[in-house]
Amino acid sequence: RFDRESGKFAHFTTQNGLSSNVIYGILEDERGNLWLSSNNGLSRFNPCTRACKNYDERDGLQSKEFSGGAYYRAAIGEMFFGGINGLNCFFPDSLKDNFYVPPVVISAFKKFDETVSREPEKIELSHHENFFSIEFAALDYANPAKNQYAYKLEGFDQAWIYGGTRRSVSYTNLSPGKYIFRAKGTNSDGVWNERGAGLQIIIYPPFWKTWWFRFAATGTLILLLMLVHDHRVKQKLARMMEIEQARKAENELLRKQVADDFHDEFGQKLTNIALFAELSKRNLDNASPRAITHLSKISDTAKSLSEAMRDFIWTLDRNKDSLFNVAERLRDYGEALFAKTGIDFEIKGLSEELEQISLPMDWKRHLIQIFKAGMQNSLRHDGCKNVTLGIAPNGQSLEIYLVDDGKGFGNDDSVAGPDWRYVKKRAEKIRGRLNVFASPDRGTKIQFNGSIP
Image (cartoon, rainbow, N blue to C red; front, side, top):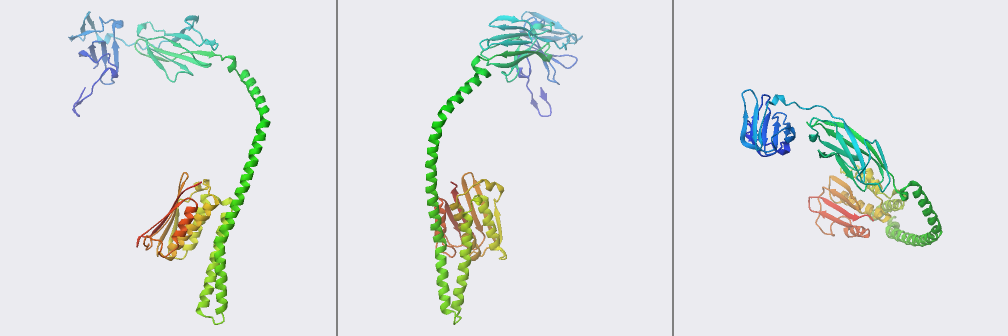
């Protein structure tokens, strides 16, 4: 078919319903239908609807094979097509379509090729009678050889199976259960009876698959389990005792670690307080600037000690073991630290999903100290205007970063700010990695990466 606007052709083949891809002759009737002779019968094709109907010997053709050049339409509309066994002539308007919707029936049920029922409605079988065949028919006698059929066994077939003119089907080795067989058919012109016919089939299971046998087997199994239960309980109790001893040892080790951390965290600061206090006493009478300086250091150290004490106690709280709690505490610290400084502070990634991620106590402690040191560096040394804290978990992996837009510094550990070597050791204690990226006038980025235990 040629499209004048696009200048392209559309091709029609057996995939569009034609009887063959070898066309010998084309005639057009008064309704615009094209009659096509081929090597596999005669086809009527509607170019508008693209509907196709095929004819063969069952419709009265001389044969399926026509001859090239042997086609003619008379002035009165009669068409002639010649083939290898003679000539077919007809008026297209005299060929009437069959719109009758035929009834469909289940005509026979066979078990092991032996008919056991005619037009059945329900069949019951034992588990070893699972080989059977079913016959069905569409009651249209205009040209019954062209009636088409489709069938489906609900509970076994996923979709309708279109079998052409075949009107029987066989099944083997079906599992016990309830099935419904359905069949539908057409008349000689392909008009379907979609309702069709149905047949209920029940295949009973063997005794070892019945409910009462399973109930008895379950009861026997329970009795056997009860016999071995005491032995398993004794083994389990012994195992629990071993686990309890291991937990006690672990708690003792944790208690020791907490004591060591308490000493490292607060012992040195308490020593500094005592030292600065003694120096202040010696110079208090003269009220020298040095005495004032020492007193200021005492105040600063005391504040730092108090803050560290609060952080340390907070990490011991088992009700605050989630990543959300850590992020929330860092947010509160950052907002308080940068308040009234002209520096904008924001946190990214703080969501309720972080509550599902639990962190060990040492992770909480070290992460808080790492990023508090980073925030203090941004405030005291970087001269920044914006500071951003980001939380980015990914499965068992965790990334936390702190970015500012300050003046930055050279990439070494001797620059102004916190002792990055000490801060990095905190990350190493929880088997993480801490990177500090900084360059002059491009700000500073502190990035922690680790795998949550």
